Image (cartoon, rainbow, N blue to C red; front, side, top):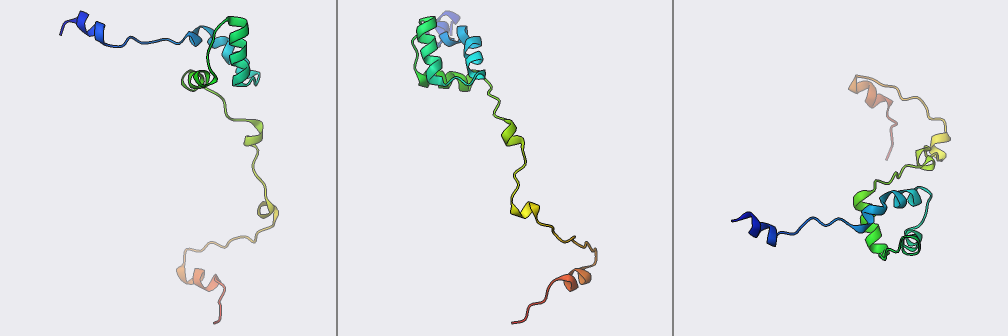
Length: 106
């Protein structure tokens, strides 16, 4: 096929208008702005009409969001973590391991 025919029928790569405002969107996200407020900012300050759905898809595709927080880095402690546990005796011998198990009577 001729190159001109291919160019005519293939889809061109479409670049979102939001790319022009990528830095603003990142800045607003870093300051915990909601997507609804970002859409409002784009409409009022930049005269760009978009939907929250479009913005959400744009963010998923083009912006890496840091999901780690200080709260998630802290270990979870529960009652089992605070109780003293008896040391486990390790043995290479199967007979010693079986002797160490508690015996149950039926």
